Image (cartoon, rainbow, N blue to C red; front, side, top):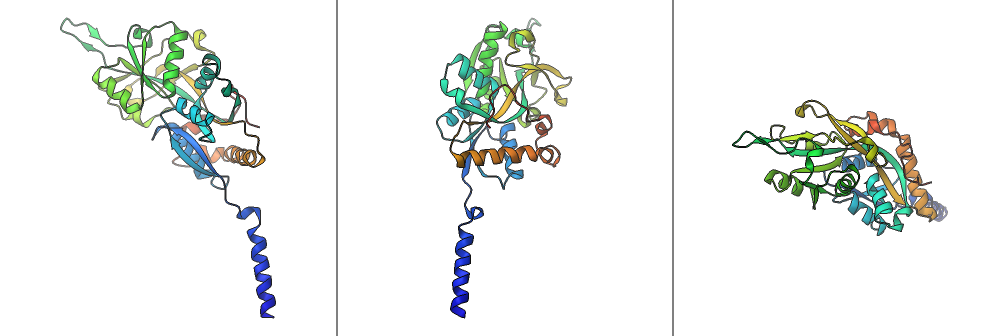
Length: 295
């Protein structure tokens, strides 16, 4: 009798071991951008509410350009990116691989932050510095990550000629601005950005992007920056952000990605209302946003 009970127990254990629920989840590597940025925070938020959908492993990058490169080289399965970077890769660079990228989740708008040191008066009382985008003519504009692409698109479309200076990190660009090596820096980031809030409003200004909307309507839409420490709201533009993947065909990979997609959509209310979630979730609808969807 004891032998029979032991045999039954072993058979039962083997059956449970072969059930799908016992299979370990495949890790999904996600390119998020710089540490402390909007993408990194939203990645963490998604992982908090969708832990049953898949395992996620973060890979920090310098921004959308590197994130797209990692996705196309099959080093990550998902990437947070700006739509203008994808359009530039496809339409300007002519990279055919971009057509294989798909939108898993359409996210929020990323506002363009144009930052400069406050103008100063010289010995003769003349102001030195820039106070708007149109005054960048002949100047140096620093950027990093996907914002380098944004700066080049604006330069090509908006009719103001300036030199784009690329930096490897946000810290390097801000150091150059502080030292006067560049006249301003441009960053596409969802507001409110913690690092922008940490800037000294006595030393720096947020500048308006005084650009004719018709010149850049295919890439950007009008927006406003609101940071109380900098005073009144500032006119700017924004670019759509996306969580993208490749057009994977294997059944297992497809099932995992679609399950994760469904979880995020079903948990949107939690992402918008749970304390500690990034405020940009309140701008998210998950509606299609100008790039083919993953289905």
